[in-house]
Amino acid sequence: MNYYVMTLFPEMIEDGMHTSIIGRAMAKGLLSLETVNIRDFSVRGDGRIDDYPYGGGAGMVMQAEPVYRAYEALTARIGYRPRLIYLTPQGRVFNQQMAKELAKEQDLIFLCGHYEGIDERVLDEIATDYVSIGDYVLTGGELPSMVMMDSIARMVPGVLSNQESGETESFSGNLLEYPQYSRPEVWHDTAVPPVLMSGHHGNVDRWRRDQSLYRTLRSRPDLLPGVELDKKDRKFLRALLEQGPEFGGYPITEQEQDFLRKLLAI
Ligand code: 6GU
Image (cartoon, rainbow, N blue to C red):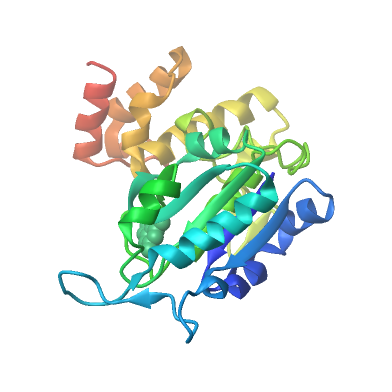
């Protein structure tokens, strides 16, 4: 996977992307990263690339021409026109499915806007995807591009070791991850859940699945309708519903009970 990032702040991208698993994958040659400083393509004597918005209003707009020239210079070097993702709160909200799909591309260009955005006309010509990373506003597309690059990279074959494999983690199968514990057995007067010390793999797997179901119900009930529930899952959820707040270690609210009744069609 070759990443290209068009930005006014290349050092922000470079500094953020050479650490941890991503840095290791770059060293291994599985990923590459190149930044393009849009300012280098200013068409004015003063090196500026922004101007006032037609129609008035607050802030400045990034001009079409510097962005276009940066894009033309970059794609001429790449040899074709890969998908270009424009980072914007107006885009489709990024998710794991999109990360998996984008990981199949050979090259990806990220275009980071700043100020009040980029002249719409150049976006119409060069952007293939408009992507947001969630419902809040950031000062620019740099952090969102790094979030996307991190998440896409871990879906590229060989980037994660078998140990770190992407499949059994949060969001696979639409369930949140179960809690993890390591040594010592007792920390701040709290013991590790006994089932994890039992050596009974079947019970451990069941407990983890129940924890995942419970966490998803509490934090992300919107994900539950997308989960494939088997007989034992339903049994656990029915127990949650019927025993309510008395069910050892698994308190739920009345709203959550209502939600479960609908989900299980009871
Ligand atoms: Cl992609 N850009 C900006 N500026 N803010 C955001 C975003 C993107 N996604 C969420 N907030």
